[in-house]
Amino acid sequence: MNSNYQSPRIGFLDGFRFLLAFWVFAAHYYTLIGGTMFFKLPSILTETFNRPVNAVNGFMVITGFLMTYNYIERRSKEPYSDQSTHLKFWQRRFFRLYPIYILCIIVAFITFVPLAKMNEANLIFFTGGNVSQWGTVRSMMQPSVSDLISHIFMVHGLFPRYYDSVLGVTWSLSLEAQFYLIFPFLFLGMFSSGRKQRQRIIVGIIAFVVVAIVSLRAVNFGCSAIGLPTYKLPAALLFAMPLFIIGIIAGAVKLRQIHLTYLLVAASVTLPFQSNTTVVLVLALLLLIFLDEIQFAIPKWLFRILDSLRSILSTKTASFGADISYSFYLIHTMIIGIVLQILITFLPELSRIQIAILGFFAVAVVCVFLSYFLFRFVEKPFIEIGRRMIHTVSRAQIPLTKSQPRQ
Image 1 (cartoon, rainbow, N blue to C red):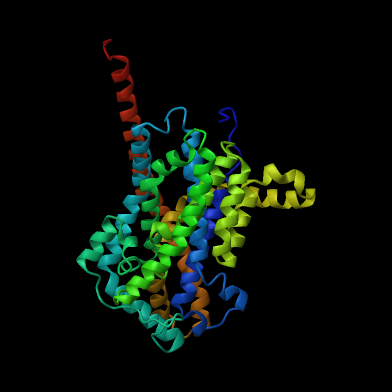
Image 2 (cartoon, one colour):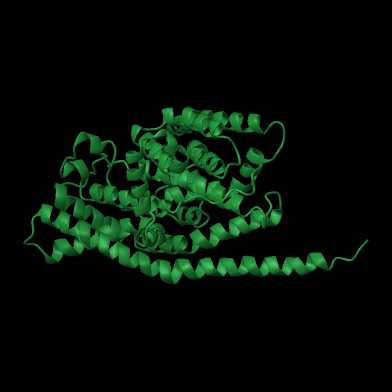
């Protein structure tokens, strides 16, 4: 492994992440005002924009990439095989994700029925009925205590009955938690040195793709056979692992730990089983990640355009967007119903389309301000607590090691 390689530019991922979060928000807003039952989009948008799971697929690749990238960058201070490295990794993830997550889960659980009634009333206002564009009727039943417990422990993604019940968007957070739990061991298994490293990586890539395809179909078939709900989203890690793997491989290739061939294999065996939108999104992401490496193979004018785009996505504004993107992602579905209900109630003279347009911008503004507040006073303080704890433990371990008596 080349330990002298300098960190390349990946700051554009800040802006990219916020764009994905905003895509999810816009698609959910469209659904909550009736979607195609209120007004129809061009068919190309119906198959792309109207399916926010594609944006979440982009998050999976970015997560795999960043976890691997940062893991490799810290290797001199935190060796891969040390148990303390694994504990630090989990600690960082916990303090980064869990405080704001559990806050949102508690709020969503307490307000579930009132918010569900608001969203139904809004849907009736826009479409004249309470059936969503997906042909479903929103549940008005308060989630159970067991449902709440599964969300508290972030295991709800493992249960098709619970994975999107309390707060729909958190199915992907359960998925991420499952990934973080196994990441240190997965990394070791894929990248530990040895003559069979190549075989381990290639076999692992293919195996994860096969398991993802087979397991989703098998689980849904079994659930249907015994009358249980089925998965409509890949909330269990086995179903989504290939996309995380693409990110992991990309991170290792970017830092020149393994050859580009592995990324080509991962993309070649994974992307044919993804939607066209996910394929385009992942390829665009990889193009920007490896733009410097491939500039010799593309026209200069194209490189300048793509590099300018990358620079725009790396600005301070983009960094701000990245800071608030997690809270923005978590809270937006709760805010949409409230803001729309206020506008419908206090601006009766406006038409449905005027309410829809005004509501979109009003919700976006409220979500941005509230997300910044949550980042500033919840996320950031807990991230700092996690850093201090890791620093304290690391400092405590140094003198202990040095003071060991000779045997």
